[in-house]
Amino acid sequence: MEVTKLYNVVLDLTNEEKEFNLTTHLTSLVTHISSNQSAAIQETLTKIQEGTSESATNSYGISNLSILKALKGEIYFGNQGYETINSILSRNSFNISQTTTEIQTYITARTEFMATITSLKDSFKKLGFEPHYYTDEIYEIGLLLPTKVTDNRITSVTKELQQWNNIIKTLKEVTGLGAEDTQISLVNNGSLEFFFTDSHTIALCISVIVERVCALYKRILEIRELREKLKQLGGSKQEQTEIGKFEKETIDKEVEQIGNEIFQKFVHSKIEKGRLNELKIAVNGHIRYIAKSIDKGIVIEINTPEIEVPEILDAEETEENKKEKGKAEKEHKEKLAKIDTVKKSIQVVREITGLGTDVFKYLTSGTEDSDLDEKKK
Image 1: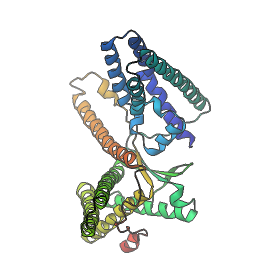
Image 2: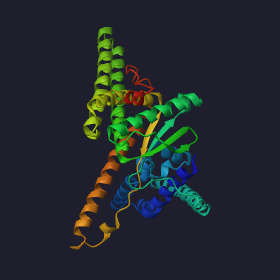
Image 3: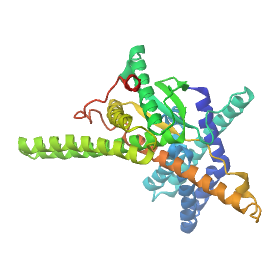
Image 4: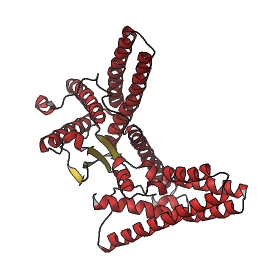
C-alpha cells in the first residue's frame, strides 16, 4: 500500500467526519428510536442519507477503494455506510431494544475506527508526509495490473506499459497535444498499480472510451444471459448461432462508434488528412486493446484533481469585479463538469469489476505494438 495514497484516503475520511459528523446523527437516531419518535427518526435518516450520498468514497477508483477495504472502513462511509445502517433498522424493525443495541455497537466500532485513522493522520503530518492528490488541470490515469494477468513477469508488465504509452501518445496527437512519451508519476504495490499524470483532455478521451466499453461489457453479458436461457429452453442451434453473430456485430459496431465519438469530440483541426486516417486506425486498435484489457481483469481508473473555489467567487460582486467574477465562475463550472464526466467512468468500472471474463471473446485484439512513429517518419 503506497503511503501517500493511504494518507489521502485518511484525510478524506477525517475531513468528512469533521464536516458531516455522522456519529452525532447516529446518536440522535438512537435517542429518537428509544423514545419512538417516528417523525424525528425519518428526519434524521434523511440527513444521514443525504450526508453519506455526498461522501468522496462513493466516487473512489478501485485503488482508493482497495485501501478503504484494507482499512475495513467501507461500512462506515458513503453509500455502503448508509446501507449498513438501513440494514440494521430493517432486520430489527419490530424490536426497538435490539435496534438500539446494534446501532450503538456500530457507533462504538466506528468511533474506534475514527480514533485510529485520526491518530494515523497526525502521525503522517508529524513525519512530514504529503497526501497524494493533484490540483487544477492535472488528472491521474491509473493502470492496475492483477497478478493473474502479468504473473509479475517483467516482460508482461513492460508489454502493458508500452501499449499504454502508445495509447496515450496517439490520443495526445489526435487532440493536438504532441506525442511525447508518458512518464510514470506513482507506482503502488500490492497488485501492480502504475499511475500517470496528464491533461484533462486526455483524461476525458480515456474516460469516454472506458465508460462506453464498460457499458458494452454489461450489454454483452445481458446478451450472453439471453442466449443461455434460450439454450436451456431448448432453442435451436441456428437461433443460438444467430445470437452469437449478433453479439459479434454489436461489439464491432460499438467499437467503431466509440472511435467516431473520440474524433468528433477531440480531434485537432490541423492534423494532415493522411495522418488523420492512420490515427483513426490506431485509435480503433487501442479501443479494442482497452476492451480486451478490461476483459482480462485490468482496471483503468482516472483520478480527478482537487478543485478549489476561486477566491473571487466568495467576494461581494461589484461593478469593478463583475466581469472577472463571471469569467471565474464560468471556468470553475467547466472544470467541475469535466470532473463529473470522468467520475461517471469511474463508477461504471466499479460496477463491472468481478462480473466475469471472456466477455469480448469475439473481439479481435487491437494492435499491441504500435508502429505509428515509424509511419510518421
